[in-house]
Image (cartoon, rainbow over all chains, first blue to last red; front, side):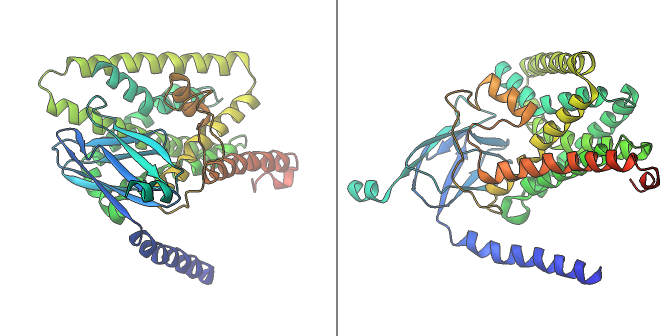
Length: 121
Length: 253
């Protein structure tokens, strides 16, 4: 039983230890929340790749990020930051909004393929 | 603000009302049993709320997701206890109901509490907020009563048991979404896209999501967690029912 417990504990620690550095290596996009608005309102990310999307809330009230197309939902508390991981996604537009201020806090993630990015440059 | 409050109230608290409705449809679960647990839930939620900001900062800002994951897992454990409630052991039933109310009630109520308290402190006039909450409460109670009438008058106990296992599996499947969001689970491509039929954003989408965990674009992780959360309690029920038919095994169940 003790051996089983130790093995389980080692697995859990090992899993998280291996997991965290992979998250650090991902490309990161930062969106700021000021006066219930997203800055920038549109962010571009590469297709077929996992991306770390960080929201920094400068407001004194919380905001809840919600996106039906991305299947993501996260509360960003007042004067704090929060991260969600999205993708790999296919090219297209994925809108998100602030659930607490849906009229003003709107934004979208634009996913572009490598070819699209090449033509843009 | 009125419509937004109603929408958020329904999204966050409808699962709690559906849970109460389903639990009251079970034999040996009384309104008093549920009521004191709800008071305890409100008390725990009010105690937890001030610490949420701190909790959310754990694990690179994914603390709140991990906390909710833990609570949904607790709810699922509660369902496993409840799955064997056909036995004469009433403490299993009591533990199961308590864990379900805590595991489903706390994450959902905290979500609405974050919105409610922030709007209450931000606006000097809270009329629309309170009105929206009242309307949302009315709609939630109405849906819960209708569901309870349906489960107690139109279907038998086996269907009710089946429904509660689907309902809890739907809540537990949120674990997959939360862990995908924090990069703990892989985020594979979506299995299908039924947004054209019923969108997640629609009223039917919200209701179906609360009832049976409907997702227009589910991932493999979501389906796998949903199926595990659904099959295990039903397997426990099946094994306990079979063991009860053997008198010597009854005590073990």
